[in-house]
Length: 172
Ligand code: IMP
Ligand code: MG
Image (cartoon, rainbow, N blue to C red; front, top):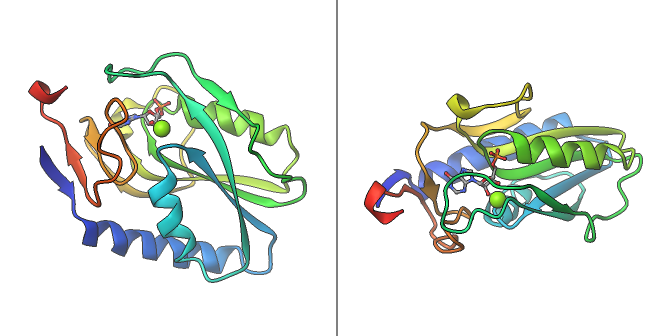
């Protein structure tokens, strides 16, 4: 395993993003909506770097990867979704890879009539993009390698690592 982003690098960027969101959403009814499970660490750090009132919500999505590093069928569950009608929503995810997950969730969330909807991701694998959608906010652009840590998993392991590392071919 090789470290790609240290804990210090991540915290510096997440703090910058939190300040930017605080300025742009002042006096607006902000809801930060995290995508389970990969966004939990990013979500927890980001909301503590936003110093304006906000609500937190969760939505569940999985693409059933298991031990594969390729995406499968997208499943979204809005069971946990709070009322967002008329609110300014920022959807938070760990990584923008092909963009299919974020695109699917954005469509579903849009149907609930938020006042506005933007997206923020920690990582953006720019080369992999398959659809015409770009995240409104991102912290890091990364090369096309499989990464784990800081919420991101491989077959549900490694999410707790405080840094982000790439997995070598032999480890996949
Ligand atoms: P997308 O739908 O292809 O954009 O994939 C997004 C989802 O795939 C993310 O929410 C992650 O759960 C997962 N994913 C994509 N790339 C990686 C990676 O490098 N490491 C771990 N999970 C990843
Ligand atoms: Mg995920």
